[in-house]
Image (cartoon, rainbow, N blue to C red; front, side):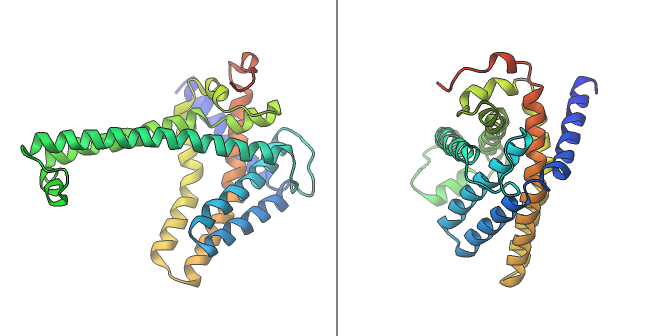
Length: 259
């Protein structure tokens, strides 16, 4: 309870209010983002990533512009500075996470190799059967699973610490990603919890639809998940991040340009 619960409650309420305040002001941009996202899923493959990248730039550019009372454009639809900043933030965050994931994969592999060699003397790392035999025991399997779980925790923590990069960039009018790290000090747990609450429904709908349906049925479920994401989840997450950004204690001193 106390300050933490008050902060979570206030931020959650700000996020929920964002759905009713931001979505009507940016409905055209959100609708186009939905269509772009669905088109990418229809094409499949690498087009999914490219479509999601473009859709996120359109949607979040419009949402953050509306949250900071910028020019509305055509119901949020425009290709301006905000969309360019969101695209740049996405690219830089992608590079950061690729580097971190590469390092974590090396660590996970080293831990798994160490556990396998400890569990099976004379272990042959080139044999898949040797891997299965070495990690088949409960103790070895448990020890080997700790590294991937810890890696997921690190990625969730890093995502939370960098969650205010879009808000900081739009508010400052320039790219701020690594310098926005300090704005989430002491608030990583709050953002992880809210991220799970906001994002989980659309993820579950998309995953369950893909597993339970084929053809047109699966595509319709995907369409529902995409619509839920852009018209509910994205406005809620944007409003929550803007709320945290405006109440960040280091906001007054966190204005240097990106290094």
